[in-house]
Every structure is written in C-alpha cells, then in structure tokens.
Length: 236
Image (cartoon, rainbow, N blue to C red):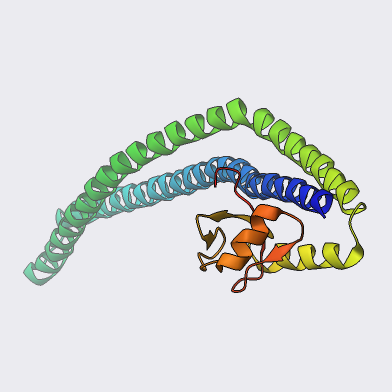
C-alpha cells in the first residue's frame, strides 16, 4: 500500500504541473490574440478616420462649388441690374443678390467648421497611426516567442500526461477510477496533505484514529468531508 501511496503522490505532482500548464495553454494564445487584435483595432480606427477625412473634404469641395455657383449667379444678376428699367424689377433682383450673399456667408461658416473638424480628424489620424505602429512593433517582438512557448507548453503537456498514464498502469483500476473522479470533481486536487489535524483540501477536522493511521501509512485514507485522498505531511 505504501507503494500505491507513493504512486498517487507522483500522479498528483503530475496533475499539479498539468494545472499550471493549462493556465498557460489558455493564456498564451489569448496574449497572442490580443496583440493581433490591437493591430486590427488600430487599422480599423485608421481606416475609419481616413474615410471621415475624405468625406469631410468632399463636403468642403461641394460647398466651395456651391459658393462659386452662387457668385456666378450674383454676377449675372448684378449685370442685369444695369439694364433694369423698373424699380420693381430692380428690387427683386437686388433681393436675390442679397439672398445669395447671405447664403454664401452661411456656406463659408460651414466650411470653417469643416476645416476645424478636419484638424481634429488629422490629430485622430496621427493617433491611430502611432497606435498601429506601436501595435505592429509589439506583435513583431512577441509573436514568434509566444508561438514557440505555445508549442513548448503543448509538448510538455503531452510528456506529463504520458508520465501520469504510465504511473496509473501500476495501480489497481478501482483506485485509478477513484483518483480520476476526484481530479475531475475537486479542482484537480485528488490528493492532499494534512495541515495539522485538518484536511489540506477542505479544512475538515481529521479524527485522532485517522491521524494514527496516517502516520502508519499502511492504507489509502480519504477525507470524511471532501473524499480527497489524505497523505501524511512529512513535517507533522
């Protein structure tokens, strides 16, 4: 039975390593994914702000074209004023000229606002360009390293699982099944050491008779609360 306990202890050591590796297996790809996501986010932001700048410029060109068209019309009206015979016609054309002048003033105000927006957009563009440069640099510096670490972790995982499998072959099947169930249902902690007179897994008080048996080390003992396998802490 001592040998079986020693094997179970070694299996738990492997499962402790597996738990650590599983954290890396989850986190390393996330780190790599986040680096790539940062690049994609900066690229998307840069694309959007460039489109806004382009649309802003198109709107500005459109307004300037409308202003030139209004000025051409005003010139025609002013030439017509020189040939008008009646006061009524003069007032009507003069009113149109004034209307176009006011309209152009409003259009010029809109252009000024668009130019101010354009400045803000240029600042945003520079910000996204800086972010993209930084994100690409960070990805370039870390992508290969993270990919290598992912490969190494997966390789280590295969080795440790293989070692655990070989250890399990030396145990009776009922014990292996019990151990596997505990690993599954007890957060990968099937075997724990006592902490004083308590279970190192759940803190349940260990009866004196069980403590005696722990010291003897002649059989596999289970916590009466969490059912984990309890082995003697050598420091006790």
